[in-house]
Length: 320
Length: 320
Image 1 (cartoon, each protein chain N blue to C red):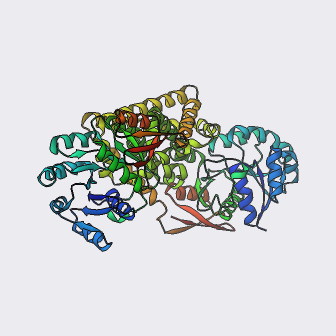
Image 2 (cartoon, chains in turn red, brown):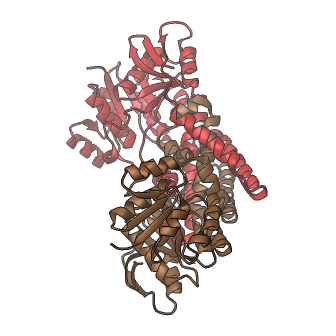
Image 3 (cartoon, each protein chain N blue to C red):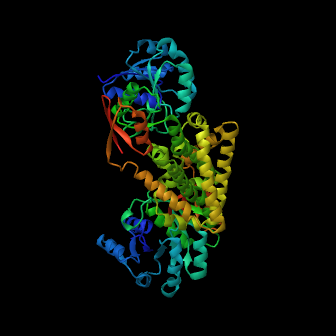
């Protein structure tokens, strides 16, 4: 038994977490508002209740509570938390970190909160879409702003590692700026591309092949979930959209004037190469969570593209 | 033996065509300027020469000659054609149709030319990347402008069908407008997205997952090939880029003012759904290539999202 985890919300991510943590030997409890999801999860052998109150009352002091509901539902859950488990160890899997941190500070100020975000998903959603392997090989951001509770940090990191992910330490603002570029903007561009293709009528749709299929894949995701994610990260997403508008406008100008797209395409090719090479680093470094400056060290690892691959006691090993 | 085909250029598409046509029982000859590619193709058992002149001289009158070189090399090949096979049956697999048609009209006006474009590819290139199954399930546009030689049209269509593709009949201008939206714009947006991601530094690269990987996949393609394709379709691509800029600008405005992305995301979701449903039609219709108005009928099939699935003699069956 490596620890206890109570998962609130059993959609794609929460449902996958329940399965993955269980497979890794954690003692897992779950709660969902949906009676049918609760029934399906119980049928699959999991300890799941449809009463959030019951879940929180039964959660042990050293258990980790995971908020796995969409951002708009976070506030509702946080309203209940202080009545049943005010000082609980708390993390989340929401795709934006600053709004969750602000909501926790306001609604559940005594909770020992360390944010989290597993960078995994599919265009499907709901309990039935979840799998125990969803997080395998994924990056799992663990919040590392100054003041974070390092005992909880280590517990969240161990859960992520046990689920097959590697841990990327990052501050909430840095996380939100990064995911605006590599997660939220891709959804906006996929929607735009899909619409421009459809504007071309049935012939254009019939001719869509690999590049169009890949470029629009995430437009198949449930629009409401994507909205919550993108709209919740408005300021950072505006920066990313402006960057994209600037680059696309420059490509337009160059194509119209000299007919050339070389600068756009070569920059994109180099960037894609950098993305494919992102895990090539193979140096290692260690961080002692009990030493002063540990959080600063962890953030530096994340900023430089590194990742934590083991946590034993207070010792973290990272690949950088 | 279902026919003879002489393929000029043995990159990804030409090399795959050689393999696929051979597997389907066509008598296949190939030519490439690259001695090493010629040697590799001969090692694989194919009848390949490094002399374009020899290929053309040995090509039978009823054989189909396929231009499978990138657009910038088309003119060079067409300069040689009239000296050895002026009235040959000619098609191509270049990703833009109007410039090729114009070049043929100028350089090889006696050739019996019907344009073609198989909508298949990978981000890899060259002979070694080719496979006999590349065209399986793909759309293969066959040029259907007024005046097209219907005997050659049927031969190109049979080749496409024998390679596992289905045939989408389209005029050159309609083809170019459609691929600007579903093939060239995706490459431009992939390059823009990759660069915006890289602008976020190593942390952003480390957090890139499914949506970023899919949205930037084609930025891994050889930039020179993508340039030739996009720059050769400048006017239609400008329309598509302007449509994208307009939609992205509207999303930006809405996000900045009301914070809402619903319109953008819902339109994109509907469009992606239309794309996924594009082959759902299951009515059939027939076209007699010997009857008046056949080319008009064929273009209507393509415009409405239909595709030709068999050609026997002068009878085409299409799913619409």
